Length: 111
Length: 119
Image (cartoon, rainbow over all chains, first blue to last red; front, side):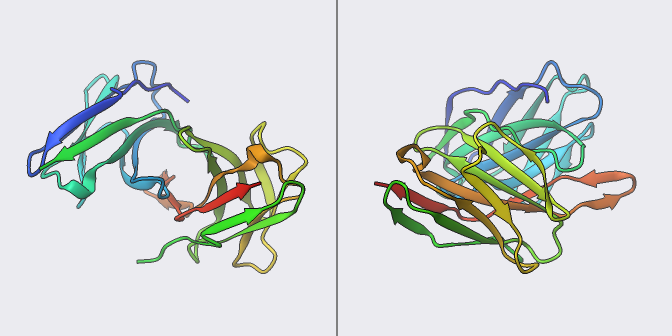
């Protein structure tokens, strides 16, 4: 699976959009981009995933560049409860494939 | 909303003792996983399980570890003789293999974890 690069940490004001970048320049054509987050040692929580097109759900939006070498997770109106470690994971769509977690981005939402 | 559950939430054990960590995956899911996270470190994959057998395991998952699905609902991780370095959060996850227009949904859903402390 392709490696990803994320900033170590970011701050965001409460109520503002949080934009979390991820670089995955070695991504291959059959690899998806997944985002999970982990709130203070709880189990990782699925947020969103995509292959080529931008995706949106009730939690977030995922913007993938046309060349697929980078993506941005957008939390449109960050709240204090969004403070967490956010993981960008690139993986193939292969049955049973494990998730490989990096260090992620620590997002601190501040009032 | 269906969720993965794990018991116990905390377990303290003496070095050398056996522990069994239990997970109840989401009911119609077919793939099951164990991960662990040592305090302050990354989440690490241990093992994946499908169709009543291990489909993949990491180097961490040595002979001291075993998994089984004894009754079709519970999914357990056994550590035969615990070591101090087994102290960690252990997360269970499950996934529904769901074909959707030719693409397979690979979303894994995680439980809240069991905090294991080996003394």
